Length: 129
Image 1 (cartoon, rainbow, N blue to C red):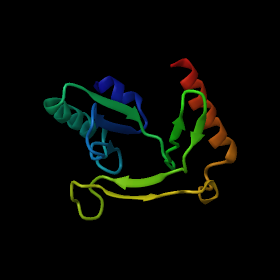
Image 2 (image 1 turned 90 degrees about the vertical axis):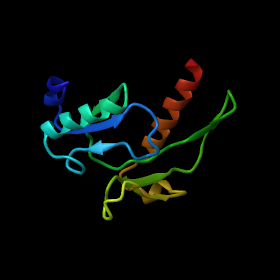
Image 3 (image 1 turned 90 degrees about the horizontal axis):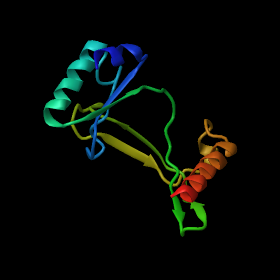
Image 4 (image 1 turned 45 degrees about the vertical axis):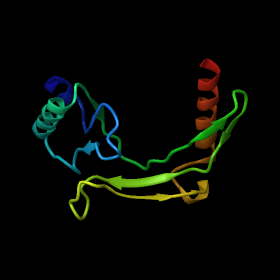
């Protein structure tokens, strides 16, 4: 595990499974060093049989959810949520707020083509299942 962590520029750690939106630990928000990341991984593995370690990507996050009847894919309004574990109050419950619905023009990082690409990925995924 240590060798894998050493390959990453930034690290995100989360238990494998449902955590009620409270399980993600992000480098520079919740820990700083790769040694701290390793200790957090070991701590999670004491309580869980597996965990997920990913490379950290900086940027905006949004969700594109769709309705499908087996033939047609229709996008619901975009949702952009902002959450951090242990922010401000240091309470274990994350401060979560969302912009719902979130028109595409209120997300300057997202181009109309990005939305179309996301819909096409969803349509292709539906066809394979």
